[in-house]
Length: 610
Image (cartoon, rainbow, N blue to C red; front, side):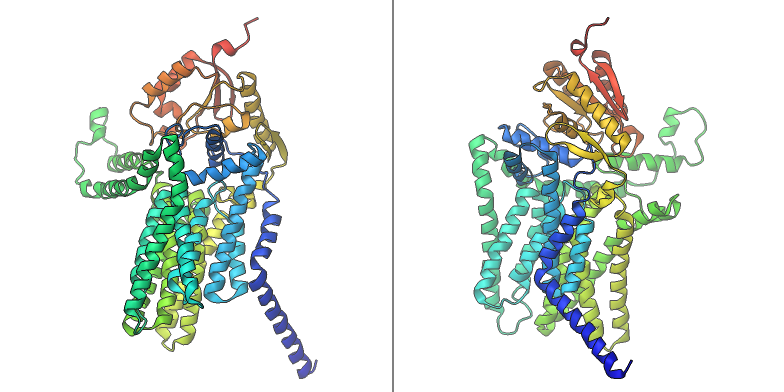
């Protein structure tokens, strides 16, 4: 082949690449929709988790449709906009489990589109933005909680053009201030604690907005302050229709208290976090084992005591135990060791990104370099928005499902930081800076690669792993028409049929400690104010109140799940709620057991003997 022919072929390849780039830049969201439909279409009916958030959301949405007063009649846990869209969906489709799943898969696609738009605006690269969007589609986070990955991206998408990027037209910035305020308002209406943490980012951006631009300090200070006021005004205005509804239905005070209690709770948990360190050792020689055992102390009694103290401390914090990095080498499998690494790696990655971007921001302010300031703020804003989800996964629920929520916006932050690191390394002649930028990129790539390797095979991260070996149909009420593994389908179909057989549609069916999907798939109501309870969240008077409610309400069926809900033996219901369990066993008849779910029926619902 001649030199000219090789050149022509190379030019054709480059032109094809440029055309593909233009297509991806222009049509990325639509192409992501195609990818999402193909991908999610393969498992949108796969799986049914009795203790999943989908059951809670569906049951609470049905209660709100029936006129139950939020917060007062039914505990929400989240704010009202988590549930109202589902109630509105059910108004159109009727209560339908498959429709609920599709709704959350649509939210997954919206999150991918926001990721694409942010990365495209920051980098100008369509292929890079599309790749990030595809990764979000592939691992969207735990299904039925996809608001969580979406909210930080929504705020970052609105904040960047409002406070960071230079506007092409002056009036557009004010429009983006309003959009950012609406994003903040929606965030508060879905998750109050995330909205409160976002307030810190909004305030910080307003303070930084005037800096690093020569000759415009006071004009930009006025604009930044007015922009923040507009953001807050729009955010407050977004609350007003829901506050008016709360006033009309008599729960306005409870509605407002959601917004004010966050900071007191934050201080409480901060004190709890610091208290054990202050009260730690010296450990008394006469430990608890001396008082309860007459045998000599075991050699590892200090370790046993420390483990017990840690267990109690975690229970008081309503969390699962989180293993430290020193536990990596004690794991029996590579998968378990990698999980500990990816649980802690974002702390290092985010710390490096914030440190480097923070130093870059300081340098940009002192040198009045607007371009450097913009790059630093992009990294700080995307990372900060992602970190609003950090406390929940790291301190309260250190598991794959909650980590997967955090990684959706954090992937975008790492993509933006990596782009700026590569660009900075190319522009710099200092080899040490180039090495540092390369190390940051490698750190981000390693974090995402290890996370993908661990999480993609897990359905708890919202992936197609849910479809694995699930081809047997299980049918219940409220549109529960799902595909399960053969044994799984047999067990859940049997559970459904037994409950339906021994209860009428209007009779109470209660589940402990947390299986709201049972109520939804059998179309049987529950009187429980809070559908969730475990050994960490139960009040001291839980046994007394629960037994009194059973005596008063006389539920037709009680289902007790004996799983170790917090990964400890004590967290099985029969252990931490022994008085309730004994009461149910003596007053109700155990008629069936499906896996760890025990089905108790009120005696008068049983057919006469003989």
